[in-house]
Structure formats: C-alpha cells, structure tokens
Length: 386
Image (cartoon, helix red, strand yellow):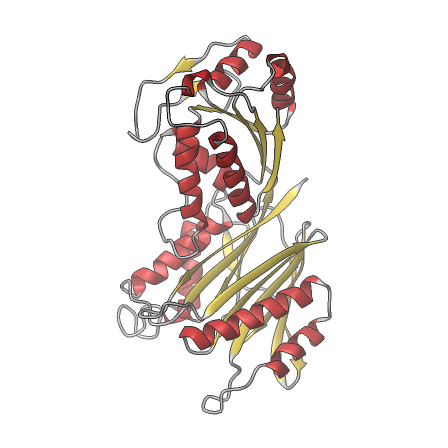
C-alpha cells in the first residue's frame, strides 16, 4: 500500500504580542520527514528568536541523520538556562520518520505528544535518555494508515486556566476532545486548526500564552489530475485527454472550452448547472466519468485566494469548505483530499476572453501560483503543458 505523510500546524500568539514564541520547522529529505516544534521561554521577540534558532538547528541536524545525543547536546549546550527559573530557554519536540511510518519522537520539556490510533487517543511508550544532565524522552514510531501524532506547546495545557477550568485544559481532556473530532477524512492541518481553535475559545480569544498545535498524519496516497485550458494545437486534444484520463485518481476539468473538448472525446454530454451558491464563482457543470467540472479563470482566482487562507498558520476558520460552489469543491479536493496533484495545462488563447480583461498569461500565472501553494501544503505537484 502506498502511504503518504502529511503535516499541518496552527499557532496562537500570546495576546498583545506580534510574534509567536513557538516555532515549527520541517524538512523532507531522502524519503524521510523531520518536524520540530520549539517553544521559546516567555513570549515576544526573544522567545521567537530562540525558538526559531532551536527548530532550525534541530531540523537541519536530524534530517542529516546526526545522532540524537549530538543533536540534543548541541541545543542544550548552545542555549542558556534561565537563572530565575532554572530551565532551558527553549523546549522542543521532534518527529523523524520515513514514508513507511517508521521513526521516532524526541521530547524535551514540551507537553507529552498524543498518539491517535484505531479511532482513539493513547500514550506512546517513552524511554528516558540522559543527555548533558537533562532528561530527554524517546518514543519509537510505527504509524499505520490514518494514524496521527499531535504535538503541542504548553499554551495548550494552560488554555482556560482560572477562567473556564481551574488548572487549564488537562491532557486527558484534550485526548477526549480529539476522540470526538478526529475523522478519517480530516487532514493533519484541519485537525491542528480544530484543536487550536478550541484552545482559543478557552482563552476567550485572548491567549495567555503562545499556543501551537502540530499534527503529523499518515494516509493512503490520493492522486488528483486537473485539466485547465485547451492545448495550443487542436491535434493535441486527443493526446492530452487520453493522458489525463489514463492517470489514476480523481479527475477535474476547469474551463468551458476544456470541458467541451473532454466531453467530445469521451463521447459524453456536458451538462451545465444554473445555480449560483456563490455570486463570485460561476456555476459548475457535469460530465459522466469526471469528478468535478468548473469554470476556468474566475474559479481558479477564487481558489488561489482560498489557498492563501488555507496556508495561514494563524487563521482559525475551518479548513474544510462547506459551500457547494466550484471553488470550494475544488479546495476540498485539492487541499484536504489530494496528496498528489498533476496539472494538464493548455496554453491556447481562449476566444471567449478577447473582450475581457483576461490576458493569455493569467491562466498560466494562476496555475503556477496554485502549484506553488500546493507544494507549501506538502503535496506532490507536477505540471504538464500542451
């Protein structure tokens, strides 16, 4: 079975601070994935700098397979210890794992990670390592399809302290909450956002501490192909549609002319909808054998705006769209469901755009920007031009 690792995180700034004292860094290298969540002591600029330094050093060293002891020693010896509190200036959690779900988790003074397996949260078995006089915890990882590991800074445990709950949001309560909200079709980013939003609610929208939730999920590969625009040479129509249809996974067609070409070559009828769920987005269509048919440039422009919002690590709005318009349906398929996206991009000038403020390069620029944002989401992206 082909599996795929995805990650997502959301951060809440301490109320009144412009910078977050937590930092998440991740690297994919040689079929291995390394993610670090670092929490700088205190808040503001100093905490942000120290967390950034910690996360970048650890992520770089561990992704290059340097030993755990050497990595941790480097951080512990490099960063000072607070004279008043007697604790390190930056705590951290690290996941280092391959694309088969095999790896390990390292934790130093961050809240204990939560492991979600077979429909419920549980604890990982931890081994204590003594490194430079500090206790560091190591957990072996062997993730299976739809397993999830949730990392958090201590702001999550402080949520609601002295307001809704006396001593903050206890770890057992967080696990119960995850048991209620986690569904197999939710992405790691969506789950992290849900949990961060719950913390923000407990803080009454005024977080008393920097709070970061990071999630790593292993799931089955789900490829999606999307055809945008007709080929420059009409003789390439058949080749383009044949290659498009031969790929595994779901199929999306964007653009009126493109939809006509696909329908003609499949010998299917193109049915247009006349409903406008969103006045900014043209209605969708339907072709038997195609999972989604939308208008072109205007829908892609709205999709690009949704992708920018989806990528924001401080935006707490739901990542899964609940509107039935073309852009929202596209967003769910590409951002939440897809693990790999293959674009088939026709470079022909659309005659229907001659009297509109849409130049021939706008479509290509939209595709390039979307491809870039999809890569930022961790998707495997290929673009093929015709």
